[in-house]
Length: 555
Image 1 (cartoon, rainbow, N blue to C red):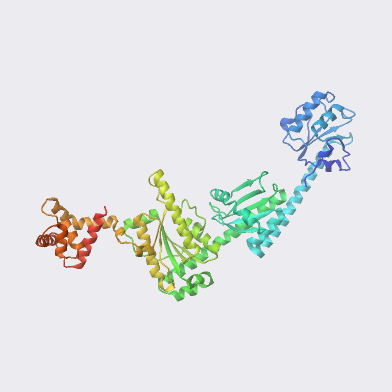
Image 2: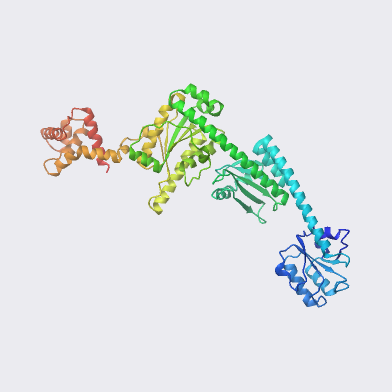
């Protein structure tokens, strides 16, 4: 405890006597200061014991003393020490009355007690209190380190909660509560998610205080991690502001949790390298080898149906489409998993998706395989699990945000995601599932969607796939000669071809649809063959012409 007026009065060597304000002696003293100024307030910070001899004060004038004492009390001075036997043989009654009116402690200092002795006593008490705080802080650090080594983050949180006589909670990068101590604090910690998200937007290290006198407690929030973006966060809830010893304990906990977080990031990088090897083996048709390498880390994922997720940033996907690069890229081990693990979602949409998926899987206790693959992210997640579900919700949120952006201003999609999701598959069919995810990704890219599931392709129509610039260019080139012929007014070959193909080559039915004789239709079809240089007896030619007509009709 810091020194108080009571401890100074009880100091046997000082011989101080209380003359006023005896019920306020438990107030802490920050320092002892000597000043004979008529108005020392501009030089006060609050919490001082002011020592005077009234050398320049008319201490016997009541109004002067009332003004003097009132200003001292308003400035936060905690006590006034008056030396008797120097300028006054005893403390003037006007000063005693003024001190009693303001309830400001007034101490009589005997002549044989120098002010320096009082200053030394205050300084020694402050130093002793600081030493006790440092010693307690080191003891707390040893205990927290012991608990972190023996019981992990959960043990550390429990020890810290005991040290500060409050509660503690640990959040992951997504703002979800990972652990809390005591157990009842979990619900309280969950109400701070919005504050954790705001803290996450600031560069680490960062801290904030929420709550206060009018709330149930005072909560300090601290970001954890050494990267530009926090990896986790610590919340410490107490009934009052932390003391020096408690502050040491909190700082020690932040350092220890940061070390644990960074160690976890190194393990995360190693796990990703194993995951990349497992994925390569699955895509190469070696499920037995993949299962052996996966071991306990990913083995459970391969024992039940899983889905493959392939994601690209919108800008990378557009570049890939423009270049026509549709070949499958073999996944490779990540060059820097640390960058992924601590990425800023505003700068790297793939890192943000990986973070969301991994956090959801961790909370549900399911295995998930996340492999960065150049400009892609490949994920193997349990079918029907939390990782697949959160991927869908994340995509829906991006869709909504994109729609809002389009309403407010054009553009702004460069850093968004394009995601393809396969159907359920097992280790033997992993390569086929990867291909399904790629196909769904290609469709999502063409349709301007964030996420498309392969199952949606099988249940939908192929016609929307024709709304591609390359397909339309092909259709325009194939049918251009027919359109140019019709433009001269020498016949309606395009409409005749469409009617004939829609009737599967049935002359009478197609002629009836056109309102012409079947011989006229036969003539027109011969002209189509002559102009195009292709035979309508070839089913591939008929298929290409029909798709070309459908593609141009969608414009």
